[in-house]
Image (cartoon, rainbow, N blue to C red):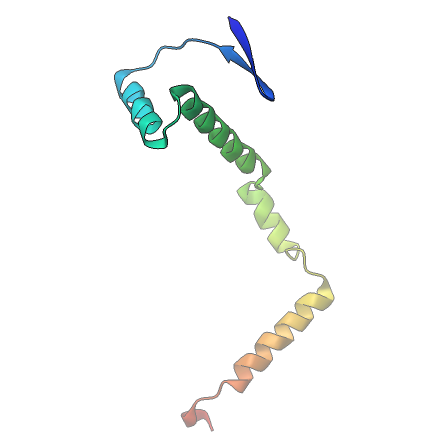
Length: 99
């Protein structure tokens, strides 16, 4: 293993085995973005890590349901005000045959 120091971060040289399809995609992205293959790999890993972190922060379906059933973050007063507002909007919307 060889370690390089690049500006503000340390680079470590490593090797890996890639199938031909992955290698072709890596080469294509490298050319398209005009960056080295290593930079394509760094960007891909960084993006996948961010996506996984976001998944970890999202509540599980049952947790979300519990939160909603407990009011979804609204106080009783806020919920009552919202219901009154929606009721007023619905009552104000009358059609010609309801007059």
